[in-house]
Image (cartoon, rainbow, N blue to C red; front, top):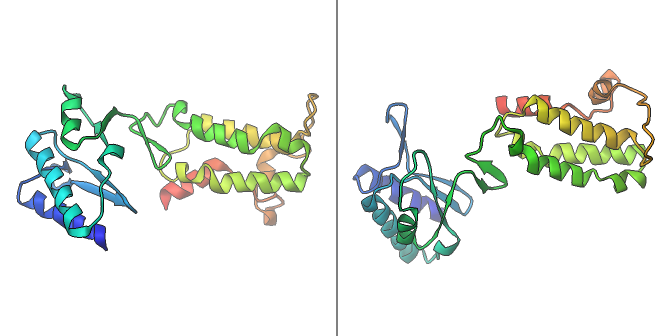
Length: 222
């Protein structure tokens, strides 16, 4: 309820021409800010007048709400074409400055979604959760629970925002497959059943793991 006041203050400032955000669809839609819980992302055209007015609005919000905005933890990020004097703009807010891509809520924003490097943090987390030492002391049923837990938690947030590439899906599939079948020995084991069959639902004769590519597509469609 409190940050809704900030949202209305920013909207009124945009209508009066005090600040200008980002325009979409031939400037039919304008975005000056996005809010998530106690985080607020401002989108301001790089003009000193607009930035100064945005700073004044935030200071007024502090006075009327009693909340304290931590400018030292805030960050000014350049979007689109590069402009000089980034530190000069950051000094207006007394905050740090950065360039895209940046990490926000665990997601890499501004990166090339088609590059597999974007998914390296997720692949690393999957490897850490499905570590080799864990499979040596875990039964097949225990490994199945761990795989489902990793599938339902770690990559889900990522694939609900970005499309999962085929190469990344194969890497995650290989990690899961090796974790489930191998028992820690160096010698390669023969897989009793095809992995696609195991990924099917239990009604269709599988173990209900599900394919990561399908989960990502369903989340994007939703």
